[in-house]
Length: 164
Image: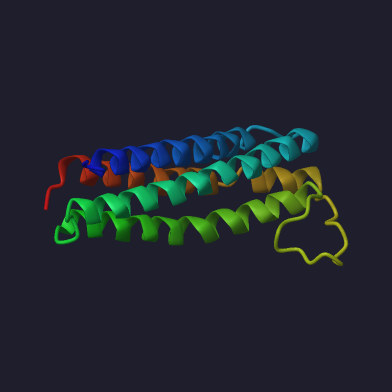
């Protein structure tokens, strides 16, 4: 029995799950740009955080399925697969600090703790409306969307067309 189609299926299902989970976070980030009510900002931040669990599960599935499919079909000698993996790592390396640092500041600005806060640290003091407005008006979400969106399109192009 040829397991390759099943491995590709797991890879694509993982990619879909990743994009679905990460997409909810991205939409929340875009919506934050126009929101100024601290309670609504907190709700959007919670939605974003909770959607990332499915994104990470999807990422694990897409990596496992893709790597297994590459072994099953002997793709490791082709440059497109290595380019896809390197690009995925570069996107993650670029987006993680840009996103986590920015959203930690926004969470603190509305009085929410982050995973970086120590358990015995006091709760953050909410920022003034002007400080919150300045944070939420940042171009950081657009930069993150551009890096992730364009990177994803290039990876899809590499996977579909296998140019080299």
